[in-house]
Amino acid sequence: PTQEPTQEPTLNPTAGKSGWWFWGAEEGGNLPGDFGENEQVPKFYDDEVVDISAGSRHSFLILNNGDAFAAGFIESDFSYKGHLGIGIDIDEGSNLVKQIDKVIDEGGKMANAPPFMKAYAGLGVASDSGEMHSMLIDRSGNVYTSGSNSKGQLCLGDDKDRFEFSQVGGLPKPAVAGTIGFEFTLILLDDGTVWGCGSNAFGELGLGSKIDFTNVPNKGNGLKDIIELASGYNFAIFLDSKNVVYGTGGNIYGQQCFFTEGEPARVPTPNILKEVKGTVEQVAANRESSYFLFDDGTAVSCGRNDEGQLGDGSFVNTSEDKPIFAVKQKGIRKIGTGPSAQSVFFIKDDSVYGAGLNDRFQLGIDEIGSREFPVEVKFGGDVAVDLISASGTHSLAIGEYLGEGVDSEPSFLEIDP
Image 1 (cartoon, rainbow, N blue to C red):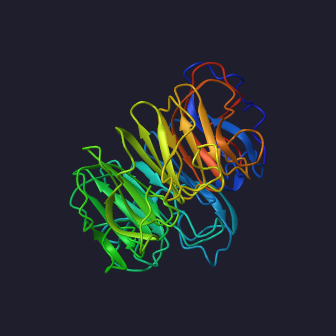
Image 2: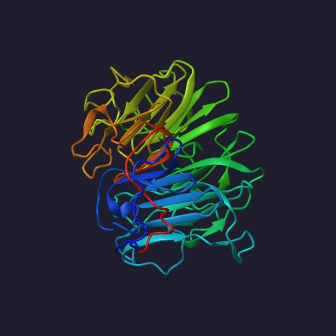
Image 3: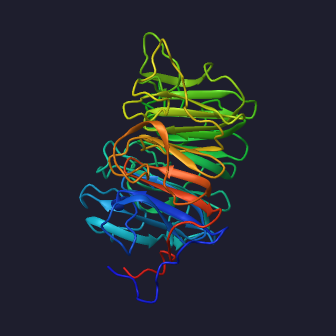
């Protein structure tokens, strides 16, 4: 695929040039243009994007007008369950970026897609799995889900897979945020309550040990006044307005920053994470690790660390003797990662540092090999990054160059496939 001759890249974006970046395995973005090439360092695109989400070999982008787009790699059309939400007309292999222009409304009828504000890409058991689901939230706080529904994780009252985003009913207030793991979904409403559906086998939904799953939204976890949430493969963490941090679900790697006797692999109801001490600004999680950012710009982490994803300078998992590690960075403004990722990014005022899995250039440092000490991402100039979403294969970011940067691509909407 080639670009039109008149669409030459713009050299050195000027100060304040905003847009988004992609790096890592090309199959996660499947953008037109230089299709088929892994991006070793972040590639900048000239689009006003308000949200991004990187999942297992797929991505979602939302433009500032609310239009949502999906792209990704489908290993097999037989195993594909609909996580891209663009209908059944998909290709086995690469699916270039496509707009999500239709949804199924609460009455079961096809409708034009509303303007969206949030996207949540899915994760599978393996990166080539088709057993994934995803979620979108529109500007009115309505929730839509698509994909695999084996445990009722789509919150639609049944176990039927969906190939278009379908509106979730039964929520008494507008949604403001959410998170998804493998076979479960959590939705944060504007009243601070958290509603979950899907698998509760490890306590992912915080509903205790007697409920295995639910296919309708359930708020039986007892959480209230929640302002942030994040999830990994089979666990979730929460922050409330009083600076109390909770965890629930899987804990085999100590990703909830503690170890218990008897049943260490699961925490069936929300548990206060007492090892997290300080004023917490953000909670974040990836596949089997957790992160906590404090108001002084420092951070701690816990859980699995075989790829150096805790950013503490080692490849050692947390343990009963040392349940929490200090991240080897200061001056952190935000943390970026994602439920399917085994890497993490520490966003500072004018730069970004990454640690963890890097076999497909997921860290954007122009070389492969996992890193246990955070290393600077090669954006090619000073950047103000607002958001990073990472997956097991690729990474996405939103922000702007503070001065002269690297070559800029035109809008992905303008590139000839």
